Length: 74
Length: 146
Image (cartoon, rainbow over all chains, first blue to last red; front, top):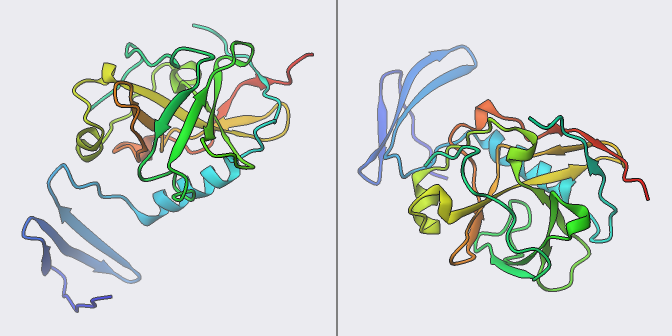
């Protein structure tokens, strides 16, 4: 992993079109600003972890009986 | 690209098996890329996403608009491009259901599976507005009566 030291207000540039800026440092929290083309998805790591965990819980034996949906239909 | 419940996302011709290729797999199951979508009329509106090669697991999926009529996933441009979608009507949209016993279930609204209905290529996408939705959105269910 490449590790760079940056001060508040300083940035790094990735691939010429993605800019990551340290906006502010407050105690344990670092506020990061990201400028990237809309084609580049940016998400918190936690979202990936959350979806992965959800998928693992959802995987079920193919013979599992399914419940009935009881939606209040609009 | 934004979806809403006017988008035709009905689960495919029932009964006939539908091959679906997920080149990136499902998060946590990246090694499985070939799936079959099976819709049994008795189990509607649920359907099954099963690995094409026999495996001890499968996923239950549902059209998320059944559970949340005002669901408005924003599918990132990179995914729209990857899937070759020109408009929402080109896509089938599914949410993965987690069964918790016979009368509790939830669905994942942050990471729907979007499939190009023409190419049968799909991807589990993380929607751009994921923070508006839950991975455990409760689904109103009751145990099936036999």
